[in-house]
Amino acid sequence: MENFALIFVALFIGYIINKRGIFSKDTPIILNQFILYISLPATALLQIPKLSFSYEVFIPILIAWIVTGISALAIFYISKLFHFSKEVTGALMLVGVLGNTSFVGIPIIQAYFGDGALPYVLMYDQLGSFITLSTYGTFIAAYYSSAGDVNTKAIMIKIVTFPPFLALLVALLFIGTTFHPVILSVLSSFSKTIVPLALVAVGLQLRFKLPAEDIKPFLSALGVKLLLAPLIAFVLCFVFSWQNQAGFVSIMEAGMGPMITAGVVASMAGLAPRLSSAIVGYGTLISFITTWIIFNLIN
Image 1 (tube, rainbow, N blue to C red):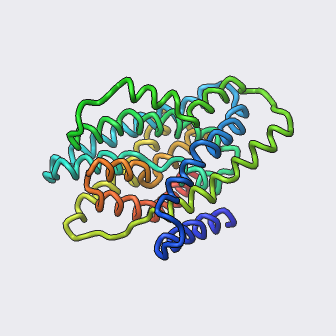
Image 2: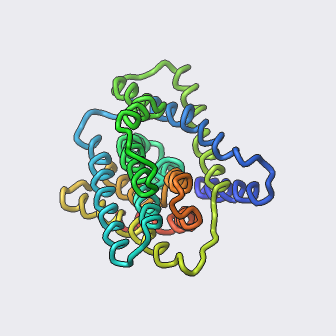
Image 3: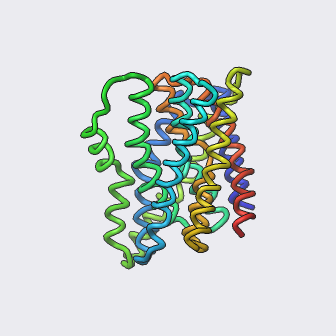
């Protein structure tokens, strides 16, 4: 109960701060940068070494990529069916496919499964969602905004120099290793900052305006992101008998709301900014209900 109280209070604080203009407009960017450069790397170095090498480590990665691929195809054909514009299609290919598996995913998984599930969250997020955002997301933004050719080299450099990804690679080298208590204490302190800072940052960026003409693409995106994506993960876990914590966490991660960063990318690329913000805003709040339903179904 305490975890959920923190989630909603932090979201509310961020939303109110934004509405009253208490902080600068750059505050979400600053908070996200702190999380990306300090909190997430600390969490990776703290949690990943607790894993043991087994096939379960790869379950979140496989599910993340399969869910992303099928979701992208679903959005593409839905857009064709309803004759959405190129701009709207590009926006949906981002916010209707990519999930908020770290900033919202970590506190939700922590609330339901405890700290022991965090290594699987990080595998899903860093080797699934992040690489997908950096590659697929960059391609979609460039293609649908007609911003020019996709620079493959730049994408690869961005991936291998991203602090959480680098921390993940380092952490994998220390699987089975126990750090000195002082190191663990420092890592733990920085790791604990991710939940309140991430949720306040999410609250600062929530948008809820939705004109009537956006309802069809809005429902299409959230239908794929909040219903189809976790269903795909559930079927995969059922077919391959992945009835374990790695599988359950992956199903929950697949059902997270739209990725805020994907909404930012869509807006910066000129891909239906108003629609993208609304999908992220409403989707984030609705996901608290849908993930609760998913958790009860898989348990």
